Image (cartoon, rainbow, N blue to C red; front, side, top):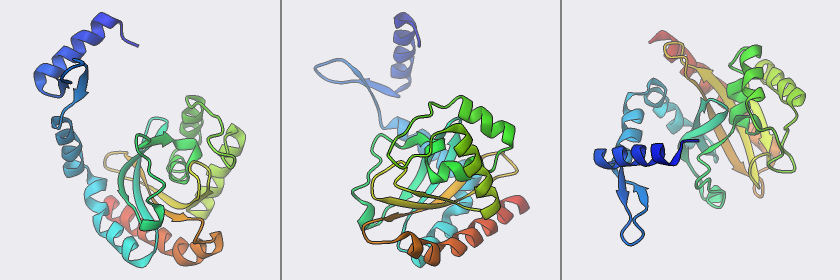
Length: 219
């Protein structure tokens, strides 16, 4: 981490630029609304975010799932977009807009887009440990799962990172930028079975992501 003096200088610079403000009373720094501008700018300029919109809309119409767009950032899955159903409102990520890639279906789908060496490097830099009782966290088992995902063209997880969650995910890569992403469909396990998820959504999601990947490759 930074030394205290360096952290203070960095905070002061961000304050002068308008990205931090001091909380009345305590004097502690907090983020300002200007920070949201950076997130909005990312959404406006990223090729994947721009291209994915009609596909997200289709999946929301055709399934009863929460639809998530995630992107790989180092060892983490970042939720860039979340369209949540009523059933899934209780499973709020909150501050966990980032999750370890190794223990989420979307993360495994994205790791399957990497080479073996790149995937091993991500796992070597990850803090591998069980998040939930169903978490697959041993490196060899994760690598086996990545291989299965490449063959099947999708990843599947049941309560591995969040309670009452069933997630089906397909990964893809933007060849122009190298960005790795995934679309995930999440269901509430209290109202939907694993078999129903496969029947309703597996082939549809594989087809949708294949078309999206082709569109990115052509542009």
